Length: 451
Image (cartoon, rainbow, N blue to C red; front, side):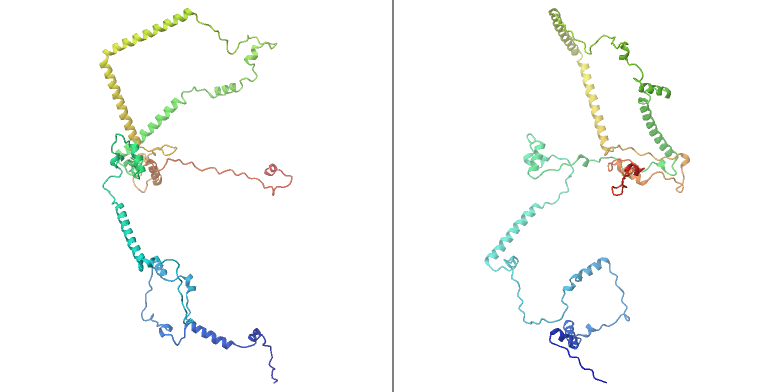
């Protein structure tokens, strides 16, 4: 067998030298050396680091179930995964053993070091002055801290002038002036609304239903409930009758035929008939009626001196007669003093009664349901069952009312929500549709396209 001749290649350059020279054994050796430097030699490691004793078969251990809170605490102690790449896991020693680590010098003064370890006399004196300042500050703050007093009634109405001794003299210091002064010296008062001091309504949060509304009521309770409903219905009917009497029944009634004739007559007035002005004219077109102006001329009739003298004399006599009547009435009133006194007292008593009545009405209005919106609150209708509709057992009870509606009405009654009505389903908005100019056929109008 003929021997193969070894191919000769040029190793002039570094790349060709690497290409045609086998250095795999050297690279493997160096890689192994570098790995040992990073993780250490196996010969130098302890048995505990290399081996692990399996004890699962001899002593089975229960898996500990951790709560979410315990898991979060355990995870908080672990280092962050995002910072794991920054940790130095290599065991390669520093090639320069005697490296000079220089700490960066801070610029300026180190106040913390001066307070903890004062060296100069100036620093010692500054610490003393600082401690004195903080002592004064603590005393000042302790004076400002006043214990809360819960003994007095914070909602009680009191005169603001009693706070300051200089404002107690109410002869020249009015309440408004005292309020203004207290506000400017930093002791102003906050005025609260009157509704804070009293309840706005007497309505209860929950009102038990009438005993007659039970599924098995007593005869007396059921009769009382029916009587209450009848009285309310009678009031409604009475109001409706009154409105009908003062509106519909006040106008005269006509038959449908008469109504149609009156309408035709009203709509055809002035059509096909001669007007009054045309009738007044003759055949030649000349107006027969004499001319009359719209505003007739005013005659300037002056009074004579004799008439003026008599008028003046009559005026004087009238005034004298009026004065005589007044004097006569005054003389008669002297004898009627007792009666007049009684009349004055009676009138004053009537005014007092009226004031009391108005106060009662105002007090009653305070606890009534207020008008929070456009609509006024109306009591809901009572659910009543006729005797033949009473079930007698819970199985056959007919559902009459809703708990949600009842709570909603109760909120309205207690001035929490405004009264509202169901507006029903709203009509959808009409959308105007038209063809785009790019989709139109040439020569065809939009009207024809719609058709």
